[in-house]
Image (cartoon, rainbow, N blue to C red; front, side, top):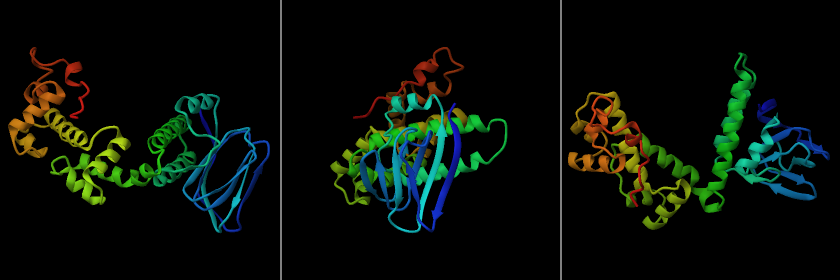
Length: 277
């Protein structure tokens, strides 16, 4: 189990800060710099910008101090015998200053972690263990997907766009319209989108529509024609063809798959959808 030893959200050091640990701290320390700082790891010195994080390992010699005042950071100390193996498995960039692709996500997590740390209850330690594992995995995955500066730059606005697509599957979008929001060419927009999310924007729009259609087929009594309309299809025939192509069965057979011997099996009905490109 990974244990949280201490935690601080948006800690303001009005008189500056100096942390000098020539033999390491004996625990893992995650520091999210919200102000510019000087950081020394072993014999290498870095000037880090705000929205940079470092995970210091227990025996890593390190030093950091403010470059600007007031100095603000988020941070936590944690420990667990299983943590080293987890970090190796997910290739987490320890002992390295890393520019956060999503600084809001990092800071929000530490704010919520601090709240959990101060709550009571029998499940507190297990909740913290799950949250820390999830955080390290999400952050590692995100950083690996945004290794290039251009991807970091577009991650947040593209993520907001992707949430919009899934929240409003009934809306009609063209790739050209979406690309114009970012003043990008259609081809470059599609290239960035696929690099970030490992699928095309058209695939996401189809999955958003069909995912909503599956939910309505399972949890409403709407007609298939009405469901097609609610999911943004102007043509019921087009909806039925696309649903069968990507889900594997027709909407009607999907709805009655549990009560008809002719219906597809759950394994078939829940198959992964092939990419449309």
